[in-house]
Image (cartoon, rainbow, N blue to C red; front, side, top):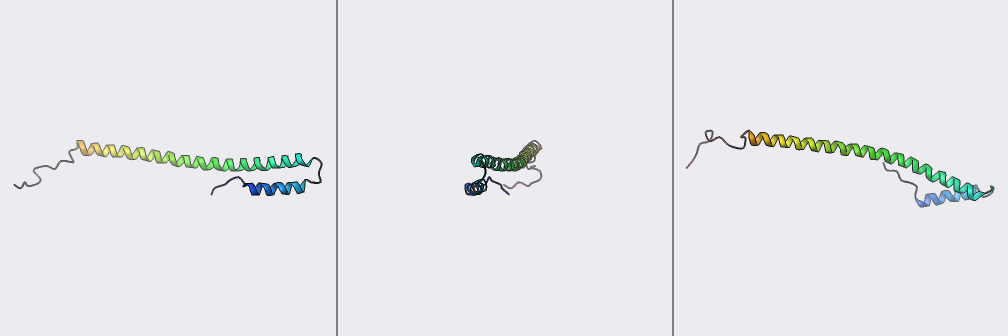
Length: 100
């Protein structure tokens, strides 16, 4: 699930609601400005926390994948050395008949 800040149309709709709500109050522009600041900062904090958790989870997956890649590489090197130095690539001449 991804979370994003509200789009511009949602923000504009909310501003219109604030305009209607605070039209009869003293200093409506200051009240609207404060409410918009709280609206945007609240969304920013909420979604920043969500994205931080998502990024931490992704970083954990990358860390595990890197560890698995290193382990697979080490096993490959170990298998190569066992094959190469263990004379496993050479077929013993006494075990196969020769044809001329």
